[in-house]
Length: 112
Image (cartoon, rainbow, N blue to C red; front, side):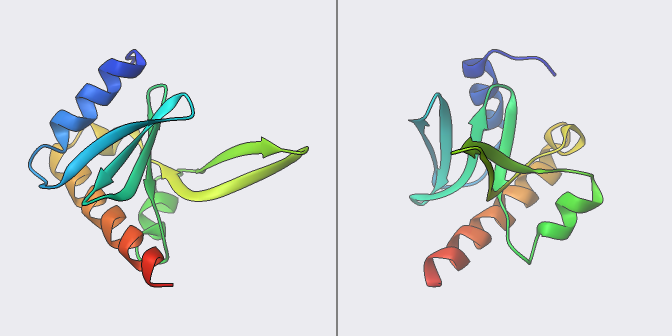
């Protein structure tokens, strides 16, 4: 899959349309995807990173995914959003399932 930044956002939003409460906003040169105001995903370029915790981390590891990371003061910082593999992006039902799990992870994070 090769998209421009906005085309990829449109693709993801179309795929997530069956889920109520999905919105998006701009963030640091990319986009944040929210459900009911909770951030569930990040989009940078043509990559989607969903919120992950102990409940859904195994799904990502099974498909050899990796966390979103950035450099700060010479150190690599990993956050709790992991790259959604292409095979998940291509399967609309699986993508919806993963998005709902990301929402649960976001809810859990607000409780802590």
